[in-house]
Length: 483
Figure: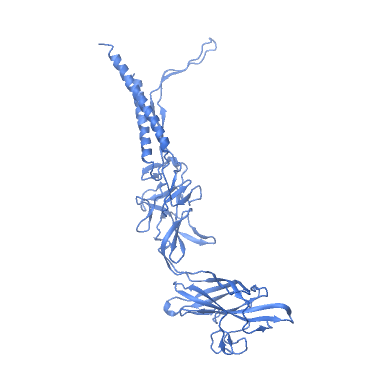
């Protein structure tokens, strides 16, 4: 009887442990990033009353099976289900879930051991740190370099606490520094119906309209580089405003002025050839001055063929040119060079429509918001319209994620059976999953399954308690044999 009582007691204890596991699962059914557990049983070593016997072929005696009495049961394992939970959309820019394998790497400051979590309910603290709800820093990279394919984070660097406002590599990230304009790409049409100021010419060379030589053979008296007719400046046929910036972020408005000056026509050489010459002048405002690379007036010539296409093969008519803009001394900014690229211009019988398609350079800007991509890159958006990377979130992967040990607060730590955390991974690489911004991974507990296990566990506990009471009654009857 004592053996049956001990067996039932072991059953009661083991089922109680399983009920504790189920209770914890149900309690965390709405816990962010929670991973449910499962308790399984195994029998305890059995007492052998007699061993098995082999059959005797000589006598024809049959074999016998071993006779054993079990000594109860025990908890075999309490394993963690690392399956992904359902995803809840929150629209918060700092909420993240992981699509696939991996864990966020967190640590309390710069000391202590790393812990790992699937709960991505992060926030930004006063100092700009990306932190968990318990104040632990989220780790990643912040050093990056620009290459042919844009910026690239140096993932060979040690991971550091991510800070959106400043770091040792980029210093103050709340302000993005100004960048001087270096290039302006123009596109559009110059009206072919405009009459040429100086009519036709038989020489396919640039017709000078500078201070020293004007197309009509007279000299310019005002020295402004604007074409003159009968001593009077001719209004430009079209003006293109362009905004550029110096190294300090000061803005300058440049008026790029166009004149249709001459049409080349020479029947003795080629009766079918028609070439049209346009003259342009860079006229800056805000007290700045402009000059060409050889310190002359910032002007140049363009040439179009009879089909309205810009001529790109004649060195006398370059389709791009560098001009140096010199800010006024009181601005504190030095000269900067801007390249005008006009290869996309055309000349057709339509309204002039030349405009800048792309002008680099920008003023300084202040961080106004940020976004996190599925590749883990945190991108800052500034009030000058520019964007700049602020950091890259790292993910940790393990050979055996189920071997991690829970340490509370939705976090895990590595064990000897989980595999070592050595090199973190960029999301979407080396087996790590991608991020889903604006979502949270919820608990992976299946409530219906837990209720089913709870009923089965209750029945098991109840049956073991019946064995215990029945054994007690039998012992009571045995004791009553002697009265």
